[in-house]
Length: 102
Image 1: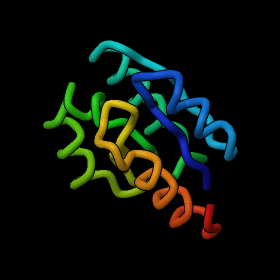
Image 2 (image 1 turned 135 degrees about the vertical axis):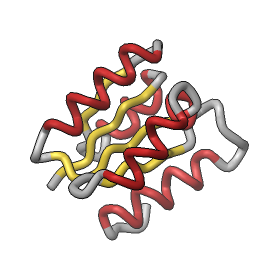
Image 3 (image 1 turned 90 degrees about the horizontal axis):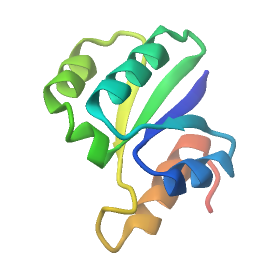
Image 4 (image 1 turned 180 degrees about the vertical axis):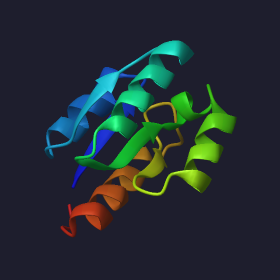
């Protein structure tokens, strides 16, 4: 079981790589949907992290997948475009996910 990040920016990807989470950076809806499809096909991935800006590109697709995907969990995470408490939110997500307080 592993995490995978689909991000709209390099900063989020670098931060996640520091804790061992691999991922990709995409900018357009078509790229995002292809990356999401690839992640859903990979049986070793259990949790797919998606930045808020990308979720906003295809909200219906994400909502549908969250309701119907039996094997993988899709989690929206804030990124550098989010509010001022972005660091705290990412710390909380990572701490909950790996069980280590950062």
